[in-house]
Image (cartoon, rainbow, N blue to C red; front, side):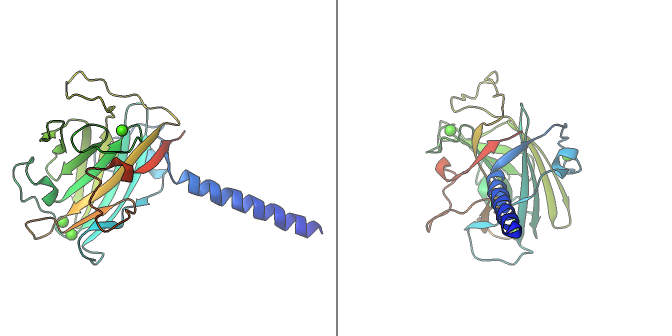
Length: 241
Ligand SMILES: [Ca+2]
Ligand SMILES: [Ca+2]
Ligand SMILES: [Ca+2]
Ligand SMILES: [Ca+2]
């Protein structure tokens, strides 16, 4: 009888921890240590968090692993959201010299941030940001005027060795009233805050237009290239301590 109680107890503990583990999957850990944005992932804080996969294909045909593989980590502190990504891409190209034109057809890393996890339409407003990070250190998103602009909200360094690139980012967070004035206040982040986030990569190797688009979450339906308009597709995360 004693054994039966023990088995029940262990089962309950096991179920509790497996539920808790799933829950933690959408929590972003707090960084107690400073993170150097230098493309080197050796910072103490990065060592403590698990990789997340960005293996959902949003555009293009199926491809072999050498063509694209991506994984990433997230962290936060009061002043920034941090992203570390490891991207395997067989060819890096930057064919559009003007960073504000057809930038999505060059290899680029994308971070979608919906500061208050409101979801909803964000094409020509700042309900959410769709930061496109180019190979040559330009950050672009479409403004309220429906024209692409450069932003200084994301500091990042890309280090590439062979087919593998490390992208390390710190992101200033702004609310949806953001108006592009240099004095517009950045947000202070705090525990329990909910944020909508999607991480993606536009892969082009040899073509005039991008060949594939991969992201961090599943998107229902035939047309999966909708994160640039619809923040409701982003995954919801909670800032944890
Ligand atoms: Ca670093
Ligand atoms: Ca590729
Ligand atoms: Ca929002
Ligand atoms: Ca490529």
